[in-house]
Image (cartoon, rainbow, N blue to C red):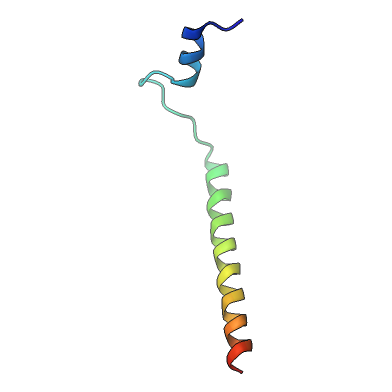
Amino acid sequence: MISGVDCMRLAMPSGSEQPQRDPELKRKAWLAVFLVSGLFWLVVALVAWHYWS
């Protein structure tokens, strides 16, 4: 069983430990953000074109 102190240690790591970030995951996340943003603006442009033409 995990004690209360061990639980807090797992939830809040000490300040000396740096979080490990996967650069590949970060790249994929930014790519997803740009693709979704581009898709959104493409839909907006197509709706505007359809509305005004």
